[in-house]
Length: 218
Image (cartoon, rainbow, N blue to C red; front, side, top):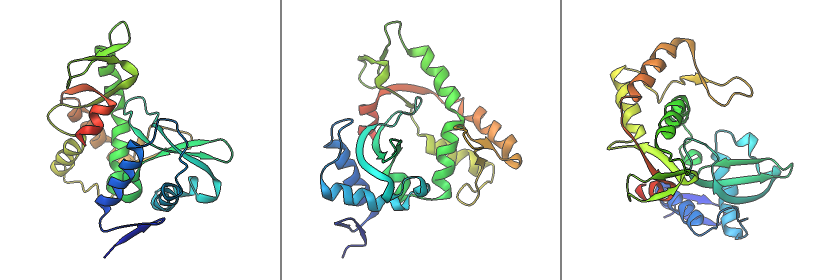
């Protein structure tokens, strides 16, 4: 018996919902407008669970397409919305399905260590704007680069640190954003622990892979 229904599609598990979303991305060319009505109906229902749905709401959507997310330090292929006013916003199925304080904190913590990612990138990009993939050992254009952690994952780093600090990031929000700010700021009561986390994170080894190689890992 199906437990979840999005558009015309029914799913037994949230894992199946995510897999369906990944399949749409895999079968869609970059920057290509989605025309399959089942795919469109699926996405219109899924984004209703997005934490920023008021910015993505159905009646303002012109069309969906697939492209790179536009995040300099964490590029990946995801869904985009083109709104009727010409504005474009990207979103992920995971963020819609996992609409929670935990995942909100995780996304903000990624942004807070983005300066470390940028610094690392500068050390590995060659003069001809190419980089050497840590997985394949081949050279690729720097625009196709993704930075991840060697021998661990960002989520594992975060979980270990905050468990050690006895802070439950599933129940409390650590940061806030001023209007117009992209990088979040730590709430006063968590300012010191956020600085400690950034220092903790800096001790883990990073590596460069392609966007496609990163997707295959997950």
